[in-house]
Amino acid sequence: MSRSEYTVDYELSDDDENVHNVWDNSLDPAVTVEPGEVVRFECRDALDGQVTQDSTADDLANASFDPVHPLTGPVAVEGAEPGDVLAVDLLDFEHKGWGFTGYMPGEMGLGLLPEDFEEAGLHIWDLGEETAEFVNGIEIPLDMFPGIIGVAPGESGEHDTLPPRATGGNMDVKHMTAGSTVYLPVEAEGGLFSTADCHAAQGDGEVCVTGVEAPMFVTARFDVRKDMNIEQPQFETDGPFTPTGQDERMYGTTGIDSDLMEATKKAVRHMIEHLHTERDLTRGEAYILCSAAVDLKISEVVDAPNWTVTAYLPESIFPDA
Image: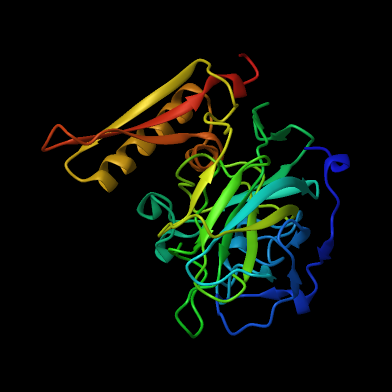
């Protein structure tokens, strides 16, 4: 949607007065809007500036996670009451030219495969209009979305931003792109909407614990739906449903195990090995690429005692495609 098709009614900068690090329904709204009005949010990156364009893997390894996720907001919507649904039309995303993907030292236990990577790894991305540059001439397409999008829980007190919740939060759903509508169950007066943790791209799974993390602007329109009743977030989207947004040649690796998490780990390990041996990436680079551009799918959960998870790699991201 072009800017000519909507008018921004309010702008929330990433200044401290508009940023918070917990979900809490006692927070005063940064702004109160009417249904139908549009807000442009400026969002810091997930680590709140601890990683810069000049950072190294050691900088990432020493980053603090207490607190994490600077959320921009909250926005109260007039008329939103517990039991209602807040409809959020995602209109536009604008990155600031760079982003990062990395994994933490294995001892921290973060990501899908901490036991496989003892040391931290980091890639700083140069973000263009449509693609981001990796190593060896690899380019991945950009499809921006907010990793965190949600409203305040009804339960009083401060709530951690790391786990997703029934009211949304850190869901990391890569399909909540521009043109999507996200529906959030309201539990607190006004809804108290916030967003953060923007990603320029991500594979389904976000396996190394980061997507292409990037400071960004998010523009959204709000409405209150009193005719809906949902228990957890729902959404409408046009995708993209593959990393490149098209049906194309993929390379797939399977993970088969009696435990779905173990099957997932096997699928990703097999993909890392493929990228290492066939595409000349280090295993660390392959892990990062899996987090940014490889999609995980549950292929089968009915043939006990084993289940199948598949990792899909789009071959068009390579320069020889």
